Picture (cartoon, helix red, strand yellow):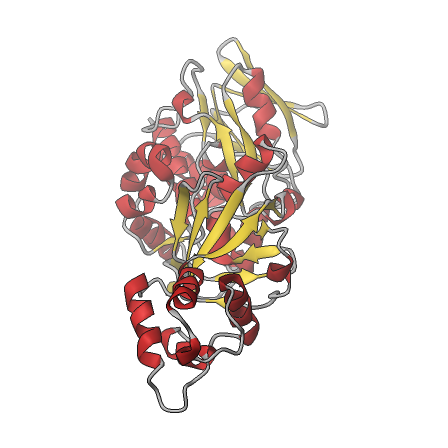
Length: 419
């Protein structure tokens, strides 16, 4: 089947790009591996789907790291988070803001997002073929040819690869695109799980399973003590380690280290009171020692947190500081008070990996950004080839950032193809 433009993958990026190009009058054919469009969209955000962020374009781009920010800056300005919101609302999907800078459909249903994307693409004139797994792509004279598992082939002067990464493989994103890109001689950064829960060998961490802490800041450190990333986000202790946005946002570093080292030497330090510096926290402890009834430590510290500290969490902190779990504030000497402050400001959790691809929300790694024009998503040296979305070596934190990157890169490719 021939077309002007082939789009491989009917996910968030592929459908967006198809709509932009088809709306400009181009003949677009979308090939989707699975029996439905937007399979991963339907599973995202706990099926709620965070379509973008409340942050401005430059602030959002900075959350992708130095290389990611430089690459995405133009795209995020060309299609801002505000533009994404207006586009969905124009498609009949009311949105609302949620905690952690998220923007979700007011219905709380990811299906509304998927239906809007598919409806917009089809309404613009894009043709979508389902159950059409692409097994290879190749350049044939002036055309790109995508061959499918049923022996069929589809040709067009331009092709957009939007096949996704390896996260949530059950939705069809099994990393097929990496092989196609490598076969073309392109540099692909080995993919690793990102936005995945962390695993820890520490038994005391597993004993805290089910406990959440809302107001903390996490800092991931290398074995040499260098800070790899900080995030001020909630965490949740699990029977395997630590989850929640704070832990998951730094997981790409862990995934990379686990892929490169047999036993990665990483530590997650949790600052339970980021609004108080060490001197202020020390002062609070000293002041508490003069309260009537000589309160126990857990009671004295309850007023400093966003809510009462669970007893199991407090006991773990006290043990790490070498303090008696039932100690009273006025019984602490200066060394014990110092150790307790250090534990509250940097509770140390050993980290040895992530829970892997089945629990990863996105992929870190992909086509090297050096191979792509950041203003059009054209692949350098390969006329007519475009790569967008998660297949690129960009990954951001939780909060609609990955969808924003998918939409912005798709918008740029769609505009370039419309020319």
